[in-house]
Every structure is written in structure tokens, then in C-alpha cells.
Length: 383
Image (tube, rainbow, N blue to C red; front, side, top):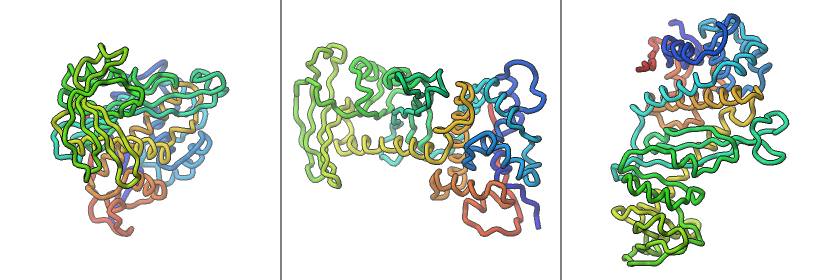
């Protein structure tokens, strides 16, 4: 019978240790680490993400019980005090840098979005992570409440988070939206929380299309009306210009479309400056924005980004960036295997098989445990 390392070990081998250590040296603070390395920190926090461990004691005790199966992970004994100290003192930017490198590799394999047009499509949104103010005093949100906010720009090619930043909870969504850099011809879709007429005009000047919902109190004047296909649920298709107090900040022509969802009967009114696509396609583009809501739901339900094993800002940021690295590694496996499995299904497979000695790709394909003739080893190569 051929030897097989644990599923967890095979997963970690997707990352080049040489490149990881290069990042670790770049993002190091203070004296040389003696009792615990950044790799040991990464392995411990990755294990916590995939196994659903909720505390430092839980992480350390479970890793210790698996020592017989974890000698090939490249770590020594992990102590609670050492892990807590490294989480608090060593810069989280190591894992932020790792995230962007993993993202570049995932993008090379990601499938395209399902629309017929060739433009890149992005969804933009933010999600608030509540924190206890007494434990996280640096994350003050309201008088008696703490929070941080996760801002994400989701590429619909593979549904990858190509733009991500973490801010204080009271940071306005539109502030981060303005910093988003996209290529000309791209389409970005967002909800009414990002309404900013000056920004709309700036996107138009850069050749970037937007799709959003029209606010009910928006003042405008209809210039022309276009034929609609009511069988597709389209109720109106108009060209307009803004006439409200801030109309001079967005003097361009805009397109207003009404759409009634045949399943729910709910009526939506969309606003865009994309005149080439059909009204039904615009409605479908906004409907696809739901993917970013599913993304937030997936990472909050399957990764540990709502409960934290440390209370300092650096420890919280470290845990979130490690979680996002795990999300990208799972997405990479999904793209490589070309199997019809969701990220949630893959994470749940890992939760009960992390230290099982079986082939990683066989696990994803649903092969029964047994002798393994060959093991495919894929490794990220960072440039």
C-alpha cells in the first residue's frame, strides 16, 4: 500500500514553504522567533478555520491529540501562550500578502461568468462583523457596541474576492467604493447604499459601467422612452437626466428600467448608464449581485470570522486574513478538480477528514478510502 499523508498535509503543500518564509521575513517584527514560527502559526490558525475550533485552548489541545498524524506538517509542539503572543505581536500583513498571491493563482483558473457579454463583471458590498466593545475597545462602532466592516469586490469570474479591505465599523461603504480600481469596460453592480452621483460621473469618465437600484426620492426628467418586452417582466425602459439639487455632479444621461420578478411579484427599478445591453440583461446582472450575499453567508457560516481567539486588533486581522487564505485555497481546489462542489461542501468534507490519511483528490471526487497508487501534488509558485 502506498503511503499517504493526511488530507491537511496535502492541502498545506499547495503553498510553497520557500515563498511563505520569504513573506514571513518581509513581515517580521521584533526579535527572532524561537519557540514558535510563523508557519506554525499559520498551520494552527488554518486548522482552526477548517476544523471549526473556537479558542486557543481548543486549537492547541486538538493539535496535540493529532501529533501522531501531524509530524509531516512541519511544526513542533504549539503552546497556547506562544500562539497568543505571535497572534498579538507579529504583523498580520504576512497573511494579507499571502492572500493576494493566492488570488493571482486562482484567477488564472477561474471560469468566466455565465453572461454572453465579454465585459468583466463585479459585485460590490460590505458586511459588518459585530464585536463586544468591552473585549475589543479599539473597534468602537456605537456608544455600547463594537464592530469592524469587511468590504469586498467580488469578481463573477469564479466568484473570487478580488478587492478586500477591513475597516472600522462606522466606515461608509461608498468611501471604499470610490477607491475601487477597475479596467475600462468593466461592469460593477451594487445596492443603493453606494449611491453617489459624483462617483457615478467618475465611473462614466473612466469607461466603467455601473448597475444599481434607483432611490425612491431621486428627482429626474425623462428624455425618451423605449419599447419593452412585458413577457420578460420589463415594465419600463427610459432615458433620463437628473434634476435634483446634486444634478450638476452627474450631468450624463442615465437609463431607468422597471422590472417585476415573475416569481415573487416584487417590482424593482434599476439605474445604469449602460445602453447597449437589453433591459432583461440589466435585470439579470443586478440579480446576480446576490452572489456576494452568498459569499458573505458562506464565509460567516463555514469559517471563523465572527468569533475570535484573540482580542487585539492584530490578532483579529490575522484571523480574518488566514480565513480568506483558506477560502482561496478551497476555491483553487474547486477549480483544479472541476467538480460540481460548492466551497461550503468542500470545507465540510475537510472538517471530518483533516487528519485522515487518504488522497485529497480522491476525497473530493468521492472515491472510497483505500490503497492509493499515485498522489497528485500541485504547488503554488509565487512570482
